[in-house]
Length: 203
Length: 203
Image (cartoon, rainbow over all chains, first blue to last red; front, side, top):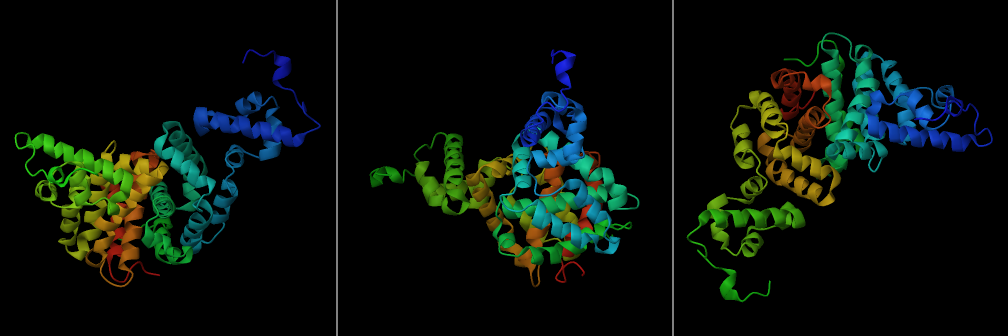
């Protein structure tokens, strides 16, 4: 905080150990996200508390979403995941999104689920998750779920998938546990598909 | 436990204060559900630890579901709620269930939500919730969601509604918070309706 300017931007300060530098950045990021939330934690402040230059953070992690994912050991890159869904033809996205969610995102004992558990009982963790979902998923609603009300339809799709993952892996509802992911995708994908299409669910 | 038989069934032991007796039963029930889960906590063991006759528990609370609801101050009677949905024509159930869930069950700061929060981080609470959902909702799948695969369709419907309530009230996803419950019902009800009908979602 009150450090002199010279030590605040120590470019290449640990040139001999890039892994230690990366770990320092990840530790600083996890701390910053937990205390400030996703929005207010910036690449600049994270770099500062890790004693590195912001350009080094971007060099290693690309952007804040990826940094968040790596800091929390998420088993996917959120930006790449969303981009891959957007590159899928609209008519197949329901199935792709349902499968991605139920396999990758809510894999049992996975870190995304730990974050969700934390968000359930800790207000700071809830703010962090909400801002991360906003920045990663809902900010791209126009591409993911085109048409009027797309952001609402996308938010409902995400919440529904989250609910199924949670009921299955956290509550352990046996009707859902007994079924394979593909069986669940078979029932859920048509619903998600309706939410992603411009007309929305039929009334 | 090792009490003599005479004191184990003290019928009318506190005849002067029925409210204190009821409170004693509720305290014993909450404790029993938390430690043994919903299935293994029986009316008999709860009566025993409250020092009353099992018939008095049934007299005051009717059945174990209602006792659970009252012990956790749920703002509804689960048995009556499910029965009211079953008495609704199948073609209107999606809307009725979506509205009930989003208004009554996941009301912000409500006790059902507190139970869900607890279940997210505490294994005993998760077991209790799972068994309660099984006994209250999924056990009546044949009536609620008739036809093949009804139990799976009902479980998915419940999990989806839970996810929306959770994303809105716990995570505070702003896209969902900004909308009225009726706006959400308008988008969600057609999906729940498809899940409750024998044919299930179209493929």
